[in-house]
Image (cartoon, rainbow, N blue to C red):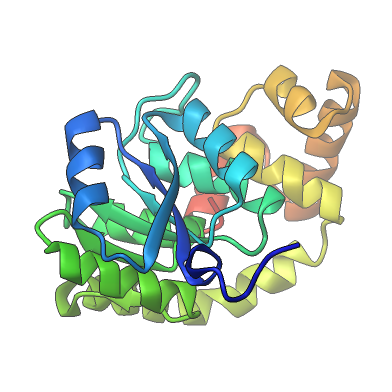
Length: 229
């Protein structure tokens, strides 16, 4: 049984994901004593394993990570969240990157990250961000927060329309739609959802019919315009 008086039990448990071992070591040394690093990873695959195994409070996650089978333009950090988050619902993801580009910030936040800070942050800044995210807050620098507000503010008017259109699709059809729109092949969708390729084909046909689209290329454009990817 956990001992609430044990200092280790009151610390924020963190997994650090970054493809540079020197950076991971330096960050680990700079975090305050109230943060306990319970795992490290260097790419998408090792990150998913580390996060699902440790079920930490917070994942400090680099945005750009190497990984097998990443789609063109896909962020390794976003892929980690997509694959690991369903298995660890209590875990929060905090992006940590050298990039302050709007597309990187917005992309990983759409995937489910609770905050985004740059690698120019001090150890104290990172520690405070970890504690804030662990407590349920969202953390951004003023500049990065502006990107998020701009992106999600612009999407408000489109959300209702997209929601109405999505209501035409069953839950399974929505899953298939998102994967196909991201560029997955029928075979890859079948493997991802543990269904047959024939079933995927049937779902895609239904999706195209219900959304009045004629091809998967039109489907990708439709989903992208509504920020559903």
